[in-house]
Figure 1 (cartoon, helix red, strand yellow):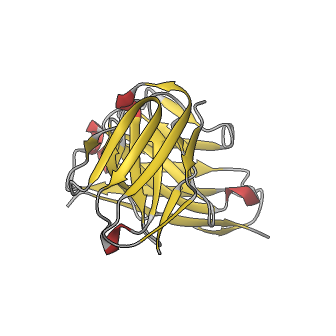
Figure 2 (cartoon, rainbow over the protein chains, first blue to last red):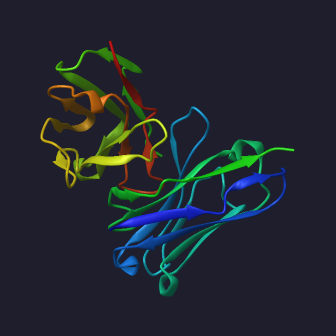
Length: 120
Length: 108
């Protein structure tokens, strides 16, 4: 079964850091680009960051640029999101999603998400 | 950045009726880079349509997509009870990928 499972969410104080992980199974992870998409409480979807299969193309939303870092370990079939200097507005469900290519492909598989709450 | 505007915000319909959802782009986009997603409460989004009109794997044929340029449409020919959800369009042709704000299809 093709599956993405996120972990690492939780409650964190403003200014602190958190690292999210996404474990992939059931498909050839290194054949796909990967993305993080978030959804604030009661809000719509916002693309956060994406990474190509070889990690040679990486992009970030302006809202997280300079604070978040995406990475992947193809040997471990895992995607990561290092989130630093967290703000209240980063509070959201964070989903990982795969796409067949870095910038021209739809997001065809999504994980169930992990909740990040930034609050003092 | 391409801005996608969806309308209406909420669509109130009965099972068996036809649903027509609109997605308008702030500039002309290539049709192969337009997708539609369905999201039910407490669940992750699910890809329905890619390339403006191609159904994703396992998606019933009551779902269809059309459009070109700046105007795109998702049509659900006959609403089933499981189709009541929020629908998002997405442009994924360049960075950053962007989503519309969503259309909620609710039971009338």
